[in-house]
Each structure stands twice: as C-alpha cells, then as structure tokens.
Image (tube, rainbow, N blue to C red; front, top):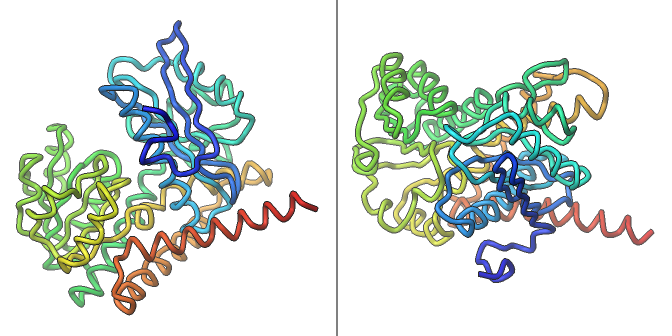
Length: 362
C-alpha cells in the first residue's frame, strides 16, 4: 500500500519511519497538524501483526490528536508515534534513548508522551536524550502520569450523561459496563463506584480484573460477553474500533461514554448509533483530561514556571462545557454527536491554519 492511498491519510504534514538495529527499534511518527502549535501525542508500543497495521494506527491516532487538542482548546497540534514490539519483553532504556535521538531530528515539530504500552519511566529515559517529550514524573514542571486526569474527565462526562439521560445527580442506580481496566479504566471504576454505580467489567488481564473487583464489587465477564450485558452505559476503555457493525447490534445500553481512542470503527457507526437512539460521547472529547495535564507541563516548560493544577482544572471544566454544548446541538440539529464534535474541532484548526498562513505572507 502507498501511504497517500491509505484511507486514514488525512493530509498529514509528515510521516516518519525510524529503525535502529542495535536496540531493535522500529517506530513511526505521524504529524497530522501543527496549525495550533507543535504536534503532541502519546507513544504507543504494540505488537502489531504487520507494519501496515502500525501505519494505519498511527495515521488514525494522529488525526484524532489534532481534534482532541483543538476541542480542548490547547495551543498544540496533533501527532502520534508507535513503536512496533512487545512492551512486556522488548523494552529497554537503550530503545527509548534511540527513539529520543530520532525525535531530535524532527526539531520540535512533535512532542511524545506515554500511551498504551509505555510509561512515565520510559518517557524519563527518552528525556535523557531529548527535550521533545512530555509527561515527566520528576521536577517542578512535571505533570506525571496523565491517567488519573484522563479518568476524571471520563467520569465527569459520565455524570453529564447520567444527568441528561437519566435525571441523576450521581451514578446511583445506574449500571456501567467497563471494557478495559488498565490505568485509566481502573481509576474510572473507582470513581464510578464511589458515585454509586454498579459495575460490570472485563479485560484480558485477570490480575487487573481481580484488583478492581476487590475494590468495587464489580461483576467480571469475559471480553466478548461485555457487549451483551444489560447496562445503562457502555464505557470502552481499551483499544479502539470496538464499536463496529457486529458489536453495536448486541449492545443493550442507552449511552456510550469511555476512555478509549478511536472507538468508532468508521464514521458510519456514529450515524448508526444515532439512529438507534444510543448517545455516543465522542471519545476525544471525554478523554481529553490526560492531554490537558500534559499541556500544563509544556506551558510550565515554556514559561519557566511549575506545573499548575488550577490551570488543568480550568481547562477540564471548559472541556465539560464543550461536551454539554455538543450534546445540546446534537439534539437540536438531530445530528450525530461525532459530527458536531468534528465540526467544532475542524473549525478551530482551520482558524489557526488561516492565521498561520497569513502570518507567513507578511
């Protein structure tokens, strides 16, 4: 497949492939847009079956980061990186330092952070070699693990859904089916449980399931069974594309509100959910807390100040207002929620791109 023929190529500004024989590094960085500022997005380490699969993932995810950063009103563009490999067996400090050297070659067009399969410790290794990483665990500017803030945003979004659909002030009496109880999913389950929700959970990691169930009293089901449970809200918090033609027919919920990126296998799935009367909470809106946390670190670094939790709270609160706006407009215009969210993000990116182009002409 030629890159430009990919259905996921969306006028990306740059796509870069890196390899290092000594460490075994095979990585792809996709910069979708720098209209609003340097491209920022996580680094995913995954045992992709093929390089083509990795390319499709990074193209899709990087575009999603442009939209996520724009919808959260951050002065950052969108990018993403993937490292092909098994994060459980193939990680090494040298691998992340090699990755960092390649980031230096991009000259600040892209900043990496942690994502699925990577950690703040991995980012710390890269930081020894490059300044173009965010999500540090040490120092006055450090924002640390973004997972708790991501979970907080998803939790608040669930509260918005509970209020609008069920007339609830908390989650009491509601059942939430959570797919994936890793870092974000586990934090989310604790928050939902504390707010009164009954939980049904699944994951491929039995230890994670047992730990969350012990804390929350959640019911555990097999990974495939999560689509068939009777619940009020489905919260996908694992990998993307779990909403597809096969799965949505099995759902017995009124709303979808989870942390996973790229939940819709295709845009047509968003249309189908709208027609089915299932409220879809656009993923890159409700899971924007983590990137807001990371953006605070970039602000601190640029301004020579410290990480500011009050700034993070302000941005997160504003994001929830945007989420409410999306739901209201969806009702008023009878349009799928993802279309409303995309339109807002695209307009913000276009305004920034036009300003950038005008400045270059001066």
